[in-house]
Length: 475
Image (cartoon, rainbow, N blue to C red; front, side, top):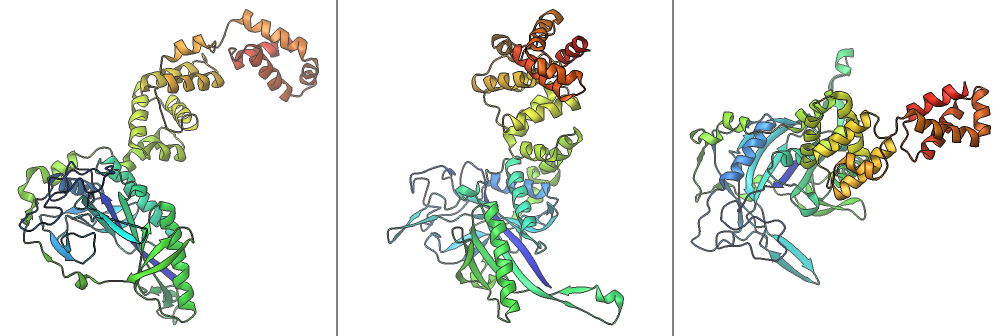
């Protein structure tokens, strides 16, 4: 048996007005290179950093959301390494005293959550390398999990849930394709051995020794995270089976080849020569009232798992729940619809069906009030399913009142027995074969006749009313 052990290190850029230690603008959408820079984030001699208060608050809120322990004392450290994208020759990070320790998310234990500054962006093309320092100094949250993950699916689920939490808290957008969220997986595989084969009880007691850790970078999608971990487990397992040694290293992920590749041999913490940052004050968080556990806790919105549980109680399908909570905007819109519908279970489920199946969670120009009104019209049999869909498409594209739109389009269902009877008489006269099949006991023929009657009324007739009239006239 071969047992994989996986730990994740996830970085997420935080949404703040300015960078982590200076007043340069934090704008991840800036396309012009080297415009959001200043002497501090460019490490000019004589400059001093100042801690971004909002970035600290973001991390404390996330730590509280996952049930972590907020530090009373915290400090920043210098992490020394020499890359072109590090203007100071070191990164201001946290090592011994992070802001948050412990916690759990998506069933995975968390080791720590801390703050640091982001690096610049290196651009390699045409045999030259350029550096854009706009990103240098942006507040960066780093979350490290315990090495307790044992499969790629769990790792992917954790990363998705963290992205959703960051967005729900308003701490950042965490778009992987923009590099606002970056995932690194530490993967090791070890052969499992039995500790003692002398007794039945001990035969089932498998002892797993941790293997050699390999760090995998360049994971820019959740699918890449899952595929890279799966590949690395298979690669290391094959090496162990062949009697070869797994080397501690950093590997990248080649999306085109769907395989990992060697980048460099892995550094240890001693290589970074951590020491406390002398230019920043120590943080005694208990002395800052807005950072007290109570203040942080009361500032939290409804969390993703709380919203998931609330929607599930309405009877929504699991896949519909996940679609709605995957976007903060969708959740806000749908909650407003639920409020308009007074929280009734059946209309809420109906609203979810239309919201997901017909709109893919995008409301367009429809408002919660107009959407809820459409649902009530359908539930009252004033609109057929087809009529509701057609009305909804117009609402999304142009906005407007569903009642007005449905009347203008001739989609309001007719309940008048005389008008419906005329359509039924025409269908019976034109569909002698189907009429005969129904009279001979084929119930499918009745549905066919109802469909023809609906077509005759251009969708304005009520299917149940047509069914009743057809049965009365044919029996």
